[in-house]
Image (cartoon, rainbow, N blue to C red; front, side, top):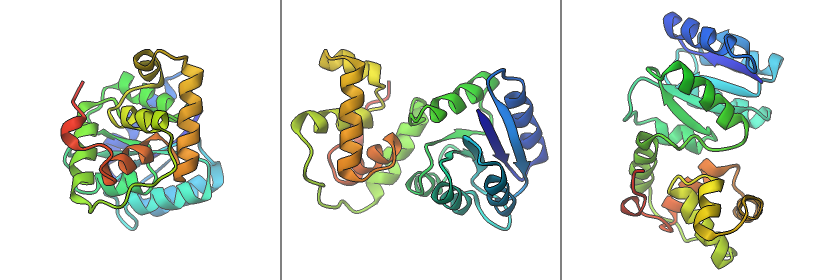
Length: 216
């Protein structure tokens, strides 16, 4: 899997690139020092995953993420220094699959890339769930989108709690394949890109509220 990395801090950029290059199943598609370079590099290399710093000169990571996601089938992970960055929610709404703090451990960085490349949301860290709950709660609720079956609604609530397909299957006593089918159908019905967008939708519509999404 190819990975594009963009950060305006040279030390972070070199460090992340070294970690990715050291993985047998990952390659560095290229590095960029700002959002404009990142968008241009993504156009040339079409990476599987892009690691984008939220705060960069010329074009911030949110706008870069939006343009990259619209133009390519690239998954985006946002990078931030602060675990309460006011831009995190907007980044997720722009289509990012999750975010990481810059002090992430090497092993977690590589595994996060793999998780997102598989099409899963990077929602495991408790701080991520806290941020989504916090920022989604600030947004005005909109009428819940109709059309989901009771089981699909149940699966959506479990996704919003941060459960994986395997964990959902265990709770519902069904196969992972059945869960994947439910997830695919509810995403299609709601017109959502991925699991991260499903989490945001669940909070925004009031299907799930922050106090009902306990940290695990």
